[in-house]
Image (cartoon, helix red, strand yellow):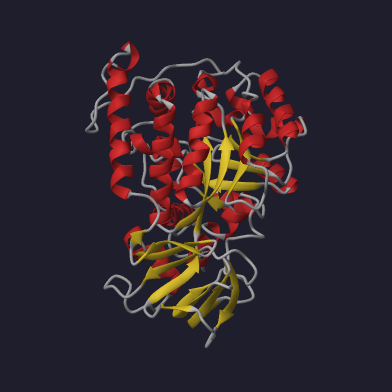
Length: 464
């Protein structure tokens, strides 16, 4: 029996270049896929959702987030990048048990769904044991969201520059959990980047990637570390292609941007974290200059919020500021080059492209999976809805996300998640947080760890 849901009378932002934005539009979902988009649609036996006063659009896609850190969120909001590396990667990360990884991933995944993110790439780089990897994947499956598990090794790989190669347990994970490309949770390889390891280890890791056969997501151009021409090094060693997503890109040299474009690679911008942590100015404009339209990323919820509305606002705000500052008379250029619709595309279809899923999700195109969100636009901050894209970018927030579908299944309705026991997920997250901070107090290097915002780790200096 065919399952049908008909969403009617919304402002439909399809992110499909042929369909555009449709006033008083309808979206028909059949058996988990988008069957039709238009005006005045009818379907027998369909559940009808009246979307009057809302924006209907594809779910957001976060192309790079460290979900395991959700249980230690916001502890680093006043830290530099160096303090983050010391406090987290050389500190708290070593005490994570598999149960803490599970709790962090589930908490972060449900937070993302609650805010309308239907697809998320989990850049999972605290997997010291096979049990940690199992826990991370199992939490993603339990969440009900579409996700890409990007296996990034463990804490031992982040004592820099690292001589520890990526664990071959990644092959077991692929065989055990990722038999099909059609499942909601798929797989990628999270590569440190050659700037974070010895050349020998970087080459060994690339050989493992070829054996694994997955897409690659790699940190490149991240602050001082990223000034070592990592993209050029990868280019010289035959490591650039269309299956590689370059994360950050802030401190890359000009010719490295062209190398990314020429290889067909994609990019992920984390504007909020990049500005907050001092990784360099977000590379949005420099990527656009070479024809690469970036995807967007929340990145490190240790420092910033976990929703795509903030990511869109930070991306457009910082890039427009940079564009204005470059003018002889700031604010008086003939036109803006980055529109609200551009950043919506970055947050949807470009995210799908960076995850290798643009044929499946990222736009309300008939035939694609029904990853659909309904955002309320009838409140005081959105009324009158004079410019839907602008309202979404500048006035949108997670609290307005009313309904979320993932492959046609409603995982949020009427503003309430239908997946998971939220109270229990919160309780488990707090328990993990308490365990990790108690463990930190017993270690000399983190004996001053505390909650409340006053803990500022010392910086562990490393040779480059």
